[in-house]
Image: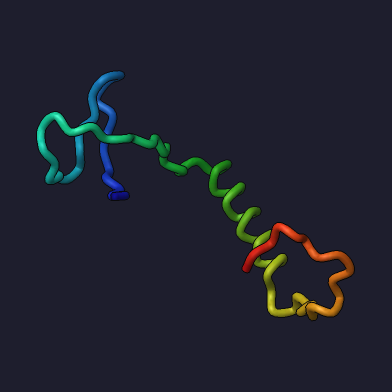
Length: 78
């Protein structure tokens, strides 16, 4: 089960959860660290990536018919 939980780092060995969670004491959990993207540089990279995706998948992107495929990928399964 994936359940995002916000927490603040207290020190190198402790986190303080923003909200309580329902989990048995002694349960093992997997923690993925995502640092907050609050820097101006992070925002610049985000905007650049979003702009690139918008260009790649815009309404002006042509639709290619299946007949244009010259050699199909034998490993592709839709």
